Image 1: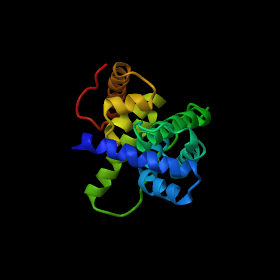
Image 2 (image 1 turned 120 degrees about the vertical axis):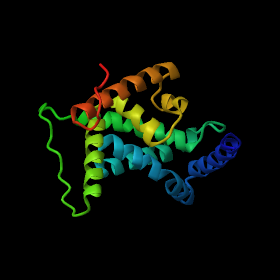
Image 3 (image 1 turned 180 degrees about the horizontal axis):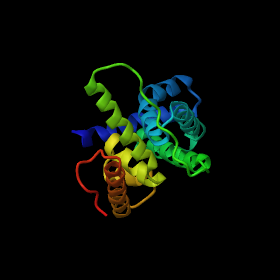
Image 4 (image 1 turned 135 degrees about the vertical axis):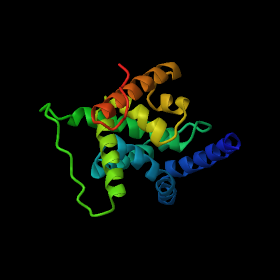
Length: 194
């Protein structure tokens, strides 16, 4: 069923891109309404900062607006394009703003009152997020695109400009590294693979 919807989405996206190329502001509003939130999720998970994520999404949408006249109809559509551009912008930003100290930044403490289960869930979420942020850029992107954004290996590989086999190898290394980070923080009840 999803496969049969893809050509319809591509045609709809091609029509929206033609309107963007004609500088139709209503078309841009539609693109933002349908595609900004998934792009923001990718950026937030990669960067760990809401304001940085917003900046990246705005930059990605600006690129879409500026490059609308170069859109090639019949492609994968707007969503995969935005995923790829957002991921690349995040990787570029992380490389530019990497801390130089080598000292691990302190965790923020969540002091909201709540039941023990909520606190434990928040701790697990924070440890997982910290472990994800500790991964190298491309490994982090592979985990986020695959497990948080439900991209297929083909879609994620395309977003990272890789072939599928290379992506699968990257994803395997990312999962092992994430598993090791989580195990070191006591989150997993078993020894991480070496």
